[in-house]
Length: 124
Image (cartoon, rainbow, N blue to C red):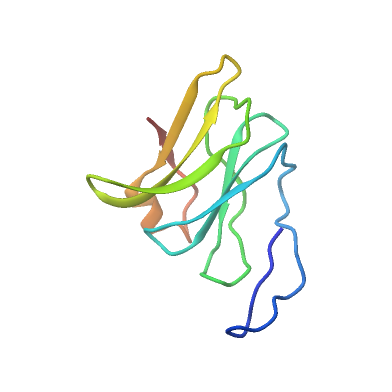
C-alpha cells in the first residue's frame, strides 16, 4: 500500500494499493540512491521475488510488477542501499528453500532509466 503527501508537513492522503501482485509476506522498500525513486520488492504467491518502483518521485504512480529473480525465494526479500566500487546503489537479499542466501544487485544502467524500463538485476 502507498500514501502520498502533497503539501510539505501536511497530512498524507488515503492509502492505496499497488495492484498487480499477490504478495506472500511483507514487501520491502528502499529509496534508490541512483534515481531517488522508491523501489519495492516482494515475494509473490508464485514464490519468486518481484519489483516495482515509482515512475516519478512522489507521484504515487508505479511501474508494472516484474519478476526480479530467476530462482524461487523461501523468504520475503529485504531491500537495502549500499556503496560499491561504482558508487551508491541498492540490492535485495533473500533465502532459497535450501537455506542459501541470495543477493541480487541492481545493474547501474537499469537504475538510471528505471522510469521507462523493466527491472534488471543480477545475482551476486
